[in-house]
Image (cartoon, rainbow, N blue to C red; front, side, top):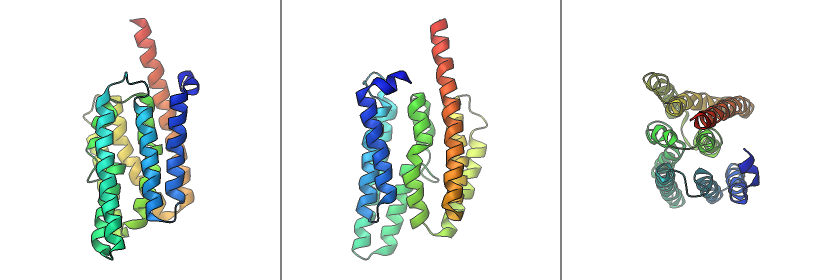
Length: 221
């Protein structure tokens, strides 16, 4: 935690990441939403591998997934401006589903979380979901969103049963919590904020404890 405070690179990247989220959720236009998501992405990539000494695989995988999602979103926005509403909504929804790791485009999340640092994993399961989930709840029809919620919860509940990695189990657990957060967004913003705050706090404390245990085991060796 101390290195996070003292490192200018990490601090600057966190500021960019946070700013991107606020730009995205407060924007009244599609371009602003997309721009905020891109700012958030670039800031988070530095958080994932600030000094270049960590495993580059999850960082590269995350970048490819998010870039693909951004292309789909931007293509959907272009269709919307050309009055191809149905095609635009489908492409935009697919892009947001991919970026947020929501069913049916969720398979990249466990493998990316598995090889990431505790800090990056925690942020990926919490803060990085805010903008995509908010936007998804706005553009996706309620009936489709209900199906996504139910299936996502089922996958999270069943998929984590045979896992032996804490990070992977947390990823599948996040699928269930993502379903609840989407349900909260459909119901009330206050419900979503309250649930998200409690979930983020629990994930943060749990991952911080895991990181301390990792450091203790390394010292013991």
